[in-house]
Image 1: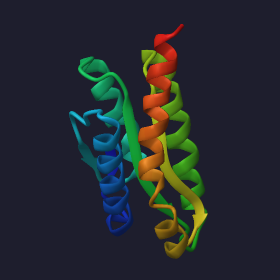
Image 2: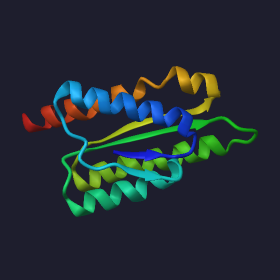
Image 3: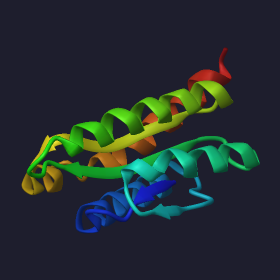
Image 4: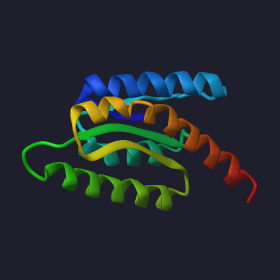
Amino acid sequence: MVAAEFNFDVTSMMIERAKAEADFLGVTISKTIMVPGVFEIPLAVKTLLEKGEVDAIITIGAVIKGETEHDEIVIAQSSRQIADLALEYNKPVAFGITGPGMTQLQAVDRIEKGRDVVDAVVKMLQRLEKI
């Protein structure tokens, strides 16, 4: 798991949901890397993929709208790089980052995405095994 510290009041709840879902599904989150913000997630994802010690990665973050369009830039760049890394390393990298354009309240309403991202990566691992 690679998770952003920025907006930690939200991401901490997403992380807890992810851990609970992993336990429920019987999968292990073997490594957790906390990074300053969503923009830093791709570098940590790449580092984990290069080491080759994980089957898949989940990403967790919350990009909340501020006074500028900064949230849109952060999401656009991070999501593209995360998708590219999954394809480059041929391993599932699930996108559990909420935003852009959401308020703090909307971010809290979306904390279940922490659970959903674990479900997505487990499904991808299962389905890719069948190919």
